[in-house]
Amino acid sequence: MAADVNVYILFYGLWKGLTVEQLTARYDISPAEAEEGVAQLSAVKLVERSKTGKLLIRAPEHIEWNDNGPLEKLYEEQMRLDFLDGSFDGPGAYRKRVGGPLSEASVAYIEKRLQQLAAEVKDLAQVDAAGQSSNSRPIYTLLLAFREWVPAMIIQKRRKSSRAS
Figure 1 (tube, one colour):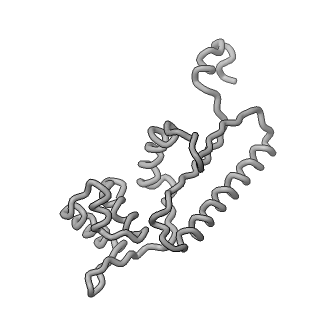
Figure 2 (cartoon, rainbow, N blue to C red):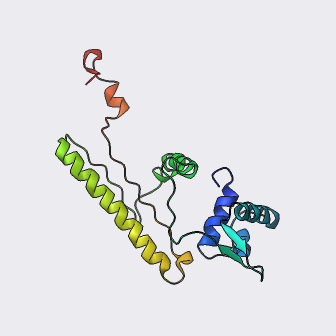
Figure 3 (cartoon, rainbow, N blue to C red):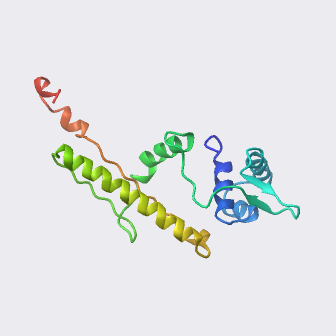
């Protein structure tokens, strides 16, 4: 799916309850490309045609990408290029950078809280996906990032004798 965005769109759309016809109307995917994508999904047993011709999804209600897997790597690049460059000014949008010197205990506490928040968002997404007409709801993305970091422009201004620290 990471190699072909059409296959990803088809899988995700079908998983969300859309039909192939709705997907080809919404996205620049021809009926022939859609059938080819459905065949690829069928070959890896993610979809199956019923006797009536209806497509059945063979995937869990909640899907997680493999850590460092091909989809995560693809979307990591998209996050850097697109997501973070977007506006965070509207309703349901939030971006804040906070930094400062932290002890090991504080770092461990923040890591634990970030893991808890990620788990909460995952749980809420599962609950909301089980609700009616989840395919019409907007999709939100929470990106959590936390590490030791100093902007390169500041590091470049350090005197050579203190750049190591």
